Image (tube, rainbow over all chains, first blue to last red; front, top):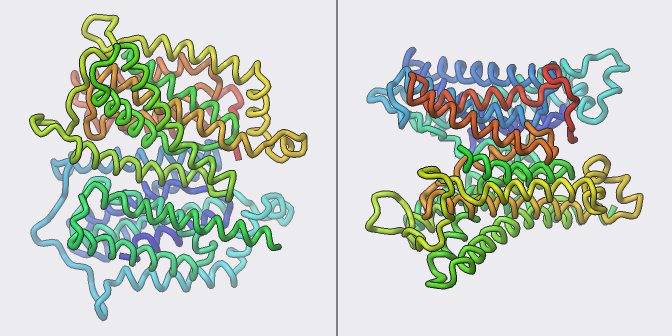
Length: 271
Length: 288
């Protein structure tokens, strides 16, 4: 349950550090979820499906990057557009290819390859967490990434194109969010319209709650997954209506966000 | 189409004031929906009161609901610097699901085939002014509100402070204007407008609460504000264009092979390009 949000949040971390407000995570995840199911069904391989999802996410991210960095569109509106575009294009392709705008399910859908009780995308998430820590703290690219978030002109003076750094960060966020979407749909073995259901936004919040550090993000995602698990379990016991249950992740995230900002605000006062 | 335009103009007005102040209200979807639901609940439960009294109380309920929901995000921003962009979106996520629940369970009309509440008493309908269309007084109210918003933003001291806060909040603080106030006020204004949009849609167009009935109005309000360059003077043409576009894609859908998704795609492309500076002649207002 952690994997989709974790992957998307790690992707969002790159853009966040580069000083790009990426609200398109939701749409990038959705397009990944759809592509993963489509390619897995065509090739019979969940690995190819996952790769396809990452590529699809990257492609949409490229459009986003091109418009915001080259054509100077407002990143926020372009992000909204990417989310709308993802919903539109997945529904459209779904009705053309599968002849339905509803749930896409296959009888013989390959299961995700599993290792010791977890699927390979979970381990991908773990590896990427460690990889991200290394990339951000120990490489020239990581340094440039953080520099572009701190001060744009410093990079220019040093002869590095900050737009290039930001573009790379957007592409990485696209690939990782696409993978996150794949983790969502491949685990279920089906595609449900708009199945990301706010997870991209939750991923964005976990970046702040995790204090913009991969390890922090990982822990936050675990807490969220626990909360989601609890709410699913609670439904069986207390018979909470489905509509309210769907709102539960938003409530948890909202509360988490307030707690975080109260604490960080207090610390600011001490310093 | 004109009835839609009125709603879009109102929603766009609220957003353009918020954007001018450099405040993001992403919770429009929730504020419209909850506002509409509040208006429906009041008009169902108020009993047989005077027609004007009933309509005005329903409107007030809707406007207050929208204003309170948006106000919470503004308050959090002022108090603890909680990002209002994300908090308003999350709050909308909560509110939408609660309203969904209210419509589909406690207040559901079990005799209806729709997932909806009972119809509101017909004496509280906004009278249609144009035959079979839902065109009603809300369009004229939206037009009047546009004039009021223009004067407020450009001719009043508070409007000046709001515009200044959007340009440079530190400067505003330095100049002795309570800048933090202008985090909450624009949020409340845009929330109230959204709440009003919801109530007008409920009383004028739908006459009952249907699950998800106002979906899209929140996002479209943002689009209208941006097409208008956050200037109330241009919100009316922008609202008309957007309503025309919406009606046009629907006609195209009926008369050709264009699907519903396709009209969404067109909207997405417009969103993509609308703020791209290389394509527009006029320099757009931008916010950091």
